[in-house]
Length: 409
Ligand code: NIG
Ligand code: FE
Image (cartoon, rainbow, N blue to C red; front, top):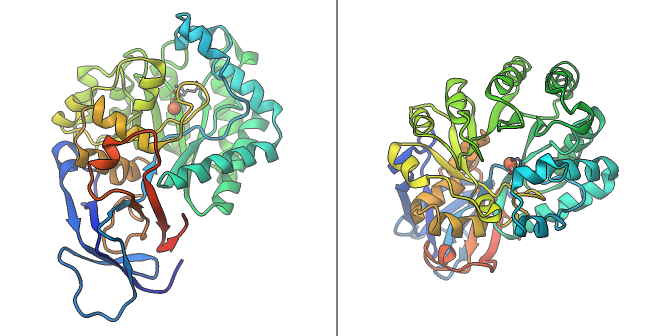
């Protein structure tokens, strides 16, 4: 943390404001603009619309550039072995995601590669990816396990996430996702796999403090609503906060379950039902984390973001970075997709990729907006208005990135 105070000056600083709860529906469009920001001891100390007059504090002149809070990516699967470019010809020949999955490709092939990889190589690979995320403007990221699916490899993955937390200048949130798939050795015995997770893996992870959240892939042919509920009940008893991969391909009612069990977030929602949208629109309902990069890459429909926002749902955006359904970690591209295909408005996109994303990983007390007292995590853009980075695509528009008042990029 930097102790030296400075003023970020001559800037176009856009930030949502934290009101203690995620911004629901229309509220997420209420972003404000400031000209100057005072950073003290790594925190936001003061904001000014017209600029501070006559203060003898060093100034960092932004030359009229756009400044936003650091981006928050609240859903990634960034620790994995191997890659899956071999699936593209299958996909182009007409196989869909679940067909490849059922044929033992997809997640299972990444599980084989992750089990076979040593910790050093997995750590190195994840570190390089996280550095790239930083260069693209991300200061807070969530990472899930879920390519181990056995005791040893799930722990190995979560220990790698812990090493990343210790070695990277980034805010990293750790999630256990043993319920990402049913591993080959438990094929046809989902109940046995769930019992193994609940009795063997989860207590150990809780004991070691290796994960803050527990996530389940609730999907037809993976974990049913009832199985998901059982895992969540056990996880909650052990102290985990909860997230769900819900209604990604089939409308199973994951959103409704998320609302009923008061999870922190419900993610994907490409196939969410009207009742699911309604359940998520209630005050206190989970944040809906939308992942348009996955829709793009699976060449499927996009989540009904407009209907969600118009119904009062709290919407966040994430990359879903993983080797199968979204092999991109670029949050800037996610913002482009949100503009063009989710039809979100620029202010809604900003709130979704900062403050609401911070709520989706329970980090809003410290990050997600440039409110007084929060960490001075911000991005200075090669742009002078909020629309520009949403309009350009395929090119990194970040000029520099600050974390807790220190320049990291
Ligand atoms: O969020 N849906 C499940 N999990 C990932 C995909 C993982 C993979 O294909 O390796 C997702 O899309
Ligand atoms: Fe995912």
